[in-house]
Amino acid sequence: MPLCLSRRQVLAGSASLVASMALPGRSLAQSTPLGLTATSRTLDIDGKAATVLGLLNSHGGQGLTLDPGQRFRVDLINSLDVDTIIHWHGQIPPNAQDGVPGLPAPLLTPGEQRSYDYAPTPGTHWMHSHVPIQEMQLLAAPLIVRSPADLAEDRQEVVMFLHDFSFRSPQEVLAAFGSAPDGGMAGMDHSDMGHSGSMGMSAGTMQMDSMGQMGGVGMEAMAMDLNDFNFDAYLTNDRTLNDPDVIAVDPGGRIRLRIINAAAATVFWIDTGAVEGQLVAVDGHGVQPLPGRRFGLSMGQRLDITLDLPPEGGAFPVLALREGARELTGLIMASKGAAVPRIAPLGEEAAPAFDYDLAQESALRALEPLADRAATRSPMLMLGGSMQPYVWTINGQSWASHVPVNAQSGERVEITFHNMSMMAHPMHLHGHTFQVLAINGQRFSGARRDTVQVPPMAMVTIGLDAGEAARWMLHCHHMAHLASGMMTEFAVSA
Image (cartoon, rainbow, N blue to C red; front, side, top):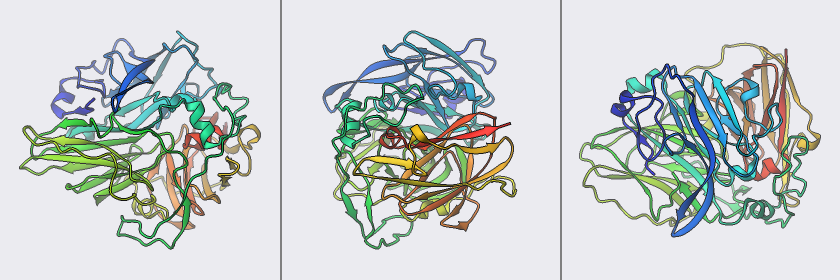
């Protein structure tokens, strides 16, 4: 399912899908909303049929792409036989359209249609169910909002949409993680989370001696819990490396690679192989270009990497390496007539832990930093939990007993995440863009984001200006951590 759009196709039409082909779109003055359907679909995963969920546009492809200035005007239809709701990850819609069960809108019942209409935030974003067991069933898709600069850049766009997948039901997977039976989600209309008990499968503790990236920083035998579940497959654009997505490119082609980590519980390294890349955006927001061949991203995060392919053409794999393990996924960009290599889905050695010392995050600088203002509130959130029992908390509380983080609309707030557990936590805030302002107390003008990775025993401080007066979710984007209650709310008052 190639996810690529050339600039010629961009200029030929708007609102095209991110799917198996670039299709003509609608004019910016679209008279009717775009259609989006939550439905089921069947994938062939290494020769075995798998029934998964999906978000199909009106052309039958996965996801949406909007052109500069185009509104997010969408009619969402639930064609599933269960209730669902979709969160527009990275967007800042009115709170009523944010897509969290009961905050404030209820789930969509089977057959129900709901309309959305707001001015979208440009960049590489995505959309997914905010019911964890549904996101684990691949109810997610790319949401790309182009800027005028994207069109002026004259680069072919390639989307790399990453998933982890199990043939077991998500209820069984969460039980294997050891999620708390009650899920800690009472009161949020998340009544059918699928927590069917606790089998307490713990992660292996890893001893690592080298980062292998960002200069090869050494690691002092630090023990981290990395992967607490082994999935059956790791997917790029719904495919494994046994049948990879092959993207047609031109010799000497200029590429903008939009990478989205939609996995439930897997951190990936992106390896651009023979072609050095430039990291130019994270979570849809521009950063000062950072050169390299290996960049990491946690669950919920996105990377934009520009590549200039050699003029002689050829085949150029871009691989996603599972953190702390040998599993690989990825796609291959190939010019006409190039021999496409066969790549084994297992590497020769395990990939290192991602950004345990926040070296990558420390190197990022926002192109459009927040205005310099003094913070009026500076709460610290302690991130805790353990593998046995499998419970994850914020300030010692799960969702059922959470204490909101309070703010007033318009005021500057600096939140410090202090991770006292031995697992990393990708912390995601709804309805806001924040800036990374400090790492372990050292201040700098870091990246603008909506999801930040907080490794074990680390502190990350983010700054933001509180937006619409409403209840906004703040949670870990590791699905098993979320399902066990690792979330609170950012409660903004007028």
